[in-house]
Image 1 (cartoon, rainbow, N blue to C red):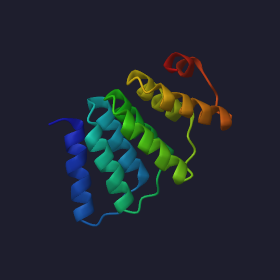
Image 2 (cartoon, rainbow, N blue to C red):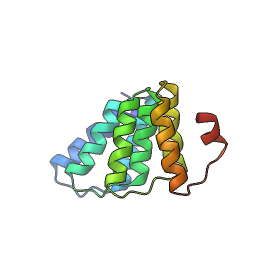
Image 3 (tube, rainbow, N blue to C red):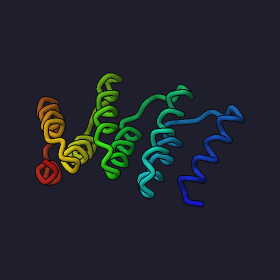
Length: 134
């Protein structure tokens, strides 16, 4: 199987064995999902992290936003972006760019512009990727 399948199996085994999991473990698993474009599994990993009481991380959410964006799942992107805000996680330029790009690719310009506005309000660096995405 693919790397994401191995990661899912390994994480499930670790959870069953009540092993202590860290955000780095979930970040790596979600990144593997991004590589293979399996957004549903990335969201499973994010939920597993929350259920395991692993502290939310910007890296994990950014990777989940990227994989959902790659799959044109703009509604999931907006939802993840909202959760990040509610959890007081700092969105970085990569997070904003992935969210803006996902909404723009799906023709959801209203959401893309709302995220761009939030980016400007947070004084986050707007780069060439931001401009191309919006």
